[in-house]
Image (cartoon, rainbow, N blue to C red; front, side, top):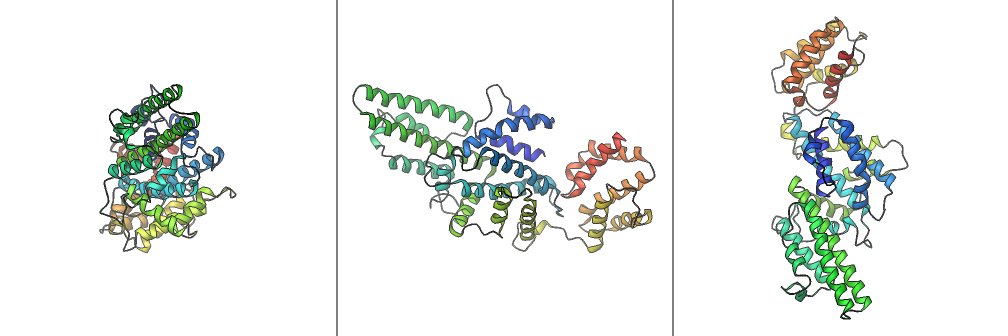
Length: 415
């Protein structure tokens, strides 16, 4: 949950959603899940108003999408992955990968070419520029240089003259500031707004002095707002890039989607159906398909994770599956009596290959069940507390075992 929590706070940070006096670091460290939920509940509508101000999707639909993001994270965490990689690294890698998939699909579904003031409008167009860094183009400009180039081109498109950006021009401060593309977007947003207000006042002064007519003034003010929207959204994109390094992936996969469309039986098709099918009460089957397809590719010769994957023999997989059924039916000895449990413990105990990295926790799980059946609860809790003190829960592999260990500690302590 910590990885997902940090991602949400990162989003709030880059969008500048922390209120004055709020301490982001303090909120991140808190173990009070209810406090986290309350904070996100207050911010979800604000996020929607930024990324979808035009209401392509309603607030209620956006809430459903956010809930599905969270549910997918739990599904991803509980999906059985047998790997030599540290679980935290694996979670971060998968979260970053699915983050790209979900963000690209949201841009694709939300973008409207007529909404040039929309948050995604300039991100969508920038990511398709030939000079934007992309996975299949190694000779492009740097991230910041590409954004600056896009903004210069957009200023020219809006009809601003180069003279306006000279030292005595009305837009000099704006051009100088734009050239920096500062890193702290939370501060840059408010500072940029101050520049925009000052520049607008200069043009309004010209209007009062009859140097501009009303139509000219309104056009200039409109174009200044358009430029601010471009600057803000691309600043957010750069902030995301600094934290996650996903810009090249976003550019590549958005171009694929724009070129080929959403293939309903592909990763992006399943993602779109899972997130945006509002006619179905339960879209979980699409999420399952998405996870299955993703890990099937990852474990193939072309997959990034394939070199770290651990192959389990049929007997190990059978025992792991049986233990899953037993956790909430510990005293049900139908087909899994004490002798069967001892076979599981003995089998996992004698393994000598790389699979031990994965199977050792299931051996311990079988020992727990044996002890609980003998009413030796204190022995289980003592071992559980020892694991917690040593921070070993973070080392547990993905799959049901992580949640079941937690359930043991909470359930049997209450007993």
